[in-house]
Image 1: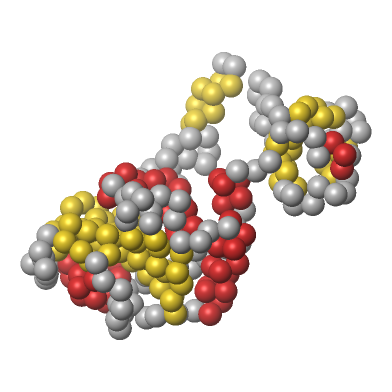
Image 2: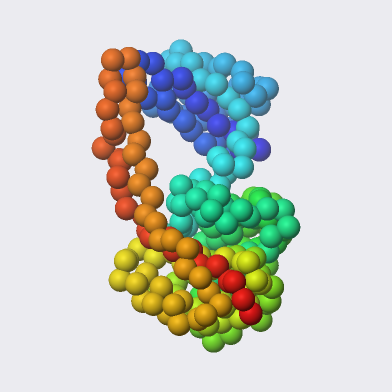
Length: 249
């Protein structure tokens, strides 16, 4: 069973965390060896390495496993996924369709909040990795289809369609037909020029109402003792998100 070893960071010293897949063998860290017997102790137990360094041991939860999924393509970061959930009001009755599934990061995370996720992709490598990641998390409500969304969408009455594609404007017409009234079309792109083309296409359909386009900037801060400042990892661009809503058939 996987385990996590974590130190509690002291002032000016960041905490460290190790993810251990095999708890049947001793685990080597730069601060010494943790005995396999210690890895089997109850969650929250404090253990010591061979150099007397203290760690806490506990079992991973969903987010720990999710952060370690295999990735074939760049995945939508959690800050953007959370915003999509909050803006569209997804819930346990929602059916979501994602096009451009990649490694399945979005589908795997969103599956915890909705009734069903349908993921379209055309690359065998992506589909294989997505299946592997879904299995590793024990998810049961994701259906994968090898389908080109530029050509068709077989599914209907969808609550939310996410287009994470190089040319999302080519899928807008099919998405419009597949959405239920009141459903959301969400487009995710790294480039604002891609988004511009997609939104111009949306404007051609009377039944689709543009809602907003955003870029979320996450600014991380270091707060330790007397140190209070932004970290060097702050303000990194991830992508643009546009929302449109189906208002009529």
